[in-house]
Amino acid sequence: MPFREINSKMVEATVAPGQKMFSQRGAMLAYKGEVSFTPNMQGGQGGLMSMIGRRVANEATPLMTVEVPQGLNDQGGAPSATVLFGHGGHHIQVINLAGDTLYVEADRLLAFDGTLQQGTMFMGSQGGVMGMVRGQVTGQGLFTTTLKGHGAVAVMAHGGVIELPITPQRPVHVDPQAYVAHHGDVRNKLSTALGWRDMVGRGSGEAFQLELSGNGAVYVQASEEKL
Image 1 (tube, rainbow, N blue to C red):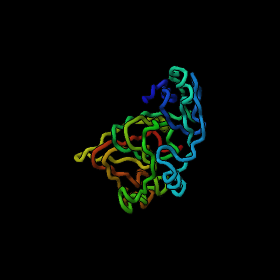
Image 2 (image 1 turned 60 degrees about the vertical axis):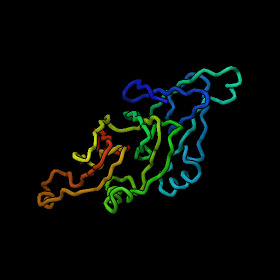
Image 3 (image 1 turned 90 degrees about the horizontal axis):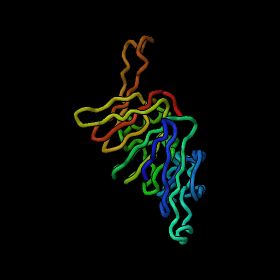
Image 4 (image 1 turned 120 degrees about the horizontal axis):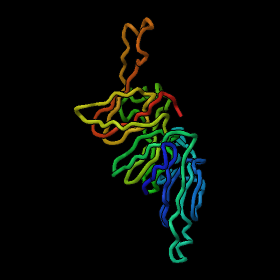
């Protein structure tokens, strides 16, 4: 279910009968049509085990299930409904997945297709020990949320987002605080640019860099501020 961008801070989704989507609680701004909003107790498409994994990982941002009530289908086919989403005045970036996996912090998820499989990944599995260090440096912790399959995801960021392609020949280096999400077959590691100038307090302040290599893309926000 594609999102339509209203402006940089609001998106609209069309929900047809029989379809389902998930959103962060409190993200609904307005809607037209017959729509139900219910607390999601099983953590999206990942089911109970996915929910337990995110609870343990502290990746359990509360979700709402958004759908057109199925009972309306017995009346000859209910019309689709539209829902307007936004949260906290944050900028929104729509990411379309075509069978690959998106890695993103749970608190950055605004809304996503119910067809996507949601899970939790241990940061050390991408980048080894330095992957875990990265989680601590960025303040994102040791785990991150994954969304896999075909569908659309709306994520939040400060100051807008740019998508940078990652290729085997051209890895991308990102300020860890400006990192939003990435997808594809990508490895990440934390590197240090610490030199003698940093030792005496005259460095650039960019002591750590997140290096992403492989095939895919990374999304970078125009700010070093957490949500």
